[in-house]
Length: 352
Image (cartoon, rainbow, N blue to C red; front, side, top):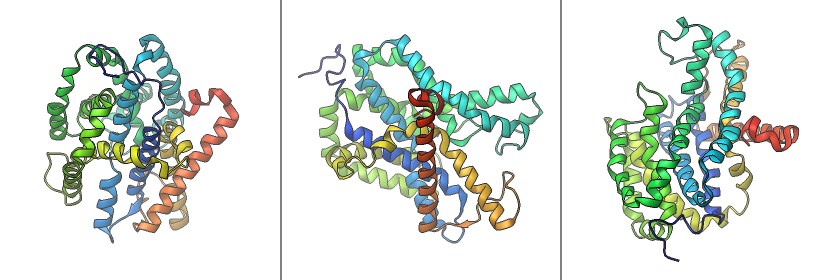
């Protein structure tokens, strides 16, 4: 069937198992990225940089997948229902799961890397800023950022259905992201600008799926070259801008989509549950990384961790893999328990 510029994606209800597996791979990489700073890489700095380059900013994959699935399911889009669903499955669990971090970082421990004036504010303003930026727990910046995309949904679908030629704007927008980087003074707005072309790239890949798959399969070698160039720039700490993780991860998202399309059967259904609860893992895994830091500091130094000096375990590949696997498994176990306790309401509590 030929797609027309005015028609929603005809295969909008088909299950895309390779994208589902990609979501599982992406959340594993995100857990790995947040594990890296918990280890001491001074004896193996090159290994640490390579692992960090592979894993860091794998949220780029999450945004690519989110854009892909948004367009893929757009045939049944209703803005009011869409916002209600996101409120229940994203915003409400974000608020609930933020409570422990908000209590800790407004009442007991000062959060590192906050603005110098932050803790001079009244507590309610600290809470408001934490929630608006997601800075109270490392991965939670994702929610205020993705919420901006939810609000843009009607505009994005108008482009998809009425002005698909505007997808060519991905090219200059991607160059802008590579120049600006992810971090800036405006928090989620800066991150949304950085990730916007990747989200729209996912939409374009879904809309023009057959053509996109053919192009990526044909030009996989140049795309791999750009991916490796981006990795080299990050590992060797070349001068920024450009920001090499976007140089690496944008073409890598295309390559992984095609690779998993062809070989997702290798995983069979082993990653299906992790993929299914990936958003829940995203919400809670940082708590367990922090818990392991507390345990590590107590066992090694006989004191309680207070926000500094926790990277004491040696940064080696076996220790890294064991640490990341422990965080992943504990997170999955916690989600299974929550699903048993809360049943069909678990998505509103824990995001899965």
